Image (cartoon, rainbow, N blue to C red; front, side, top):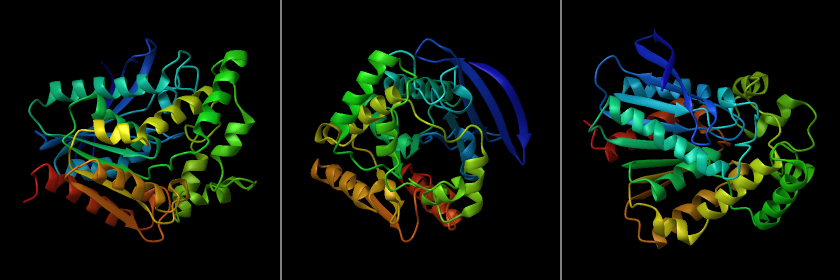
Length: 319
C-alpha cells in the first residue's frame, strides 16, 4: 500500500491509497475514513456500477462518528482505478474475481491497522452482488448489508454469450448495443435529457445532477464487463450462493420504487432464499417511495441511522 494523501477534515482522517490490483495492474485506488483514536469496528463499502467510493463520503463520515474505521476501493475499472480501461473490469478474464480479491486485500490492510476489531460489509447495487459473494469466499465479515440489489436477469445466459462473442472478436473494451439496451430497461432508457434519465436513481434531483456531472460516474459498460457482472449475478441469485453464504446477520434493504430491483421483488427474493437455506438472522427493509440510491434519497439521514443502528446491534456495539 502506498499512501497518496492524508488530511484531517472535520475530525475525520481521510487517507487515499494506491496499490497493485490482484489483476496484476498498478493503480488500484482506495479511500479510508478513520477516527483519531481506536475504532470500535471496521467497515468496508463496496460501491455500485459506474460510480466510485467518493460518493459515500457522507455515509462514511457518519460511520466514523459512530466509531467505525471505513475503507472502500474504487473497484477495478471504476473511478480513479480506471487503469486505462474505464468501465471494463480488466483486460484479463475473471474481472469480477479480481474485484473480490481486491476487497480482501483492503480488509487485510484494515486488520493490520486495527487487529481484533469486528468487521462489517456494506454493498450497494453492483457492490451488493460483490458484498453477497464475498462472505461465501472469505470468512471475514461479521455483519452484512445488501442495499439496492439488482434483480436476477432471466436473459443472463444470452447476455453472457453475447458478451463473450463481442470479447472474442472485438476485445474486452468493446461495447455491445444489445447489452446496453437491456441494461437500461426501466432505468431512463429513451430519455435524451441526462438529468431526467437519472431520475430512477433517487427523488433527490440535486444528487442525481451531481452523478450526471461527475466525470468519474456514468458512461457505457463494455460487453466483457456486462458478461462478468451477469456471471456474478447468476451466482448471487442461485440457491448455491445462499447455501454457501456464511450465516451472519444480514440486512437486505432497498427502495420500494427501485426499478433496478423490480420495485421490491429482488430484495424479497434474496431474503427468502436465505431464509429457505436456514439463515438465522436476516432482516428485510423496504423504504416506501424510495428509488435506487437510498443513501442519496430525500430521507437519506433516516436510512443512514437505520443502517448504522443495524450494524451497531449486530456487532454488539449498541449502548
